[in-house]
Length: 73
Image 1: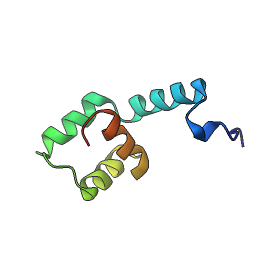
Image 2: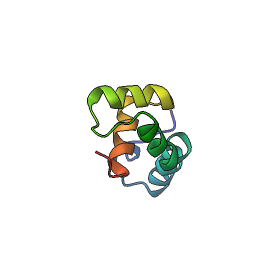
Image 3: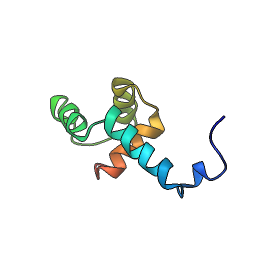
């Protein structure tokens, strides 16, 4: 309801900041790293991403983007 056409383009500074905040809140870098270490994951597969998305309670797309931003995939 509150999203406008510019929201999905990645140009709105408030939207960018909100997305970064949400990603760090839901998938903190330290916790993502700890998950990978605890599960002895060295190679990221689609299955791994799906399992991580389920663990963190986020969408597959959100988890994929977070892993990419963190330089893991």
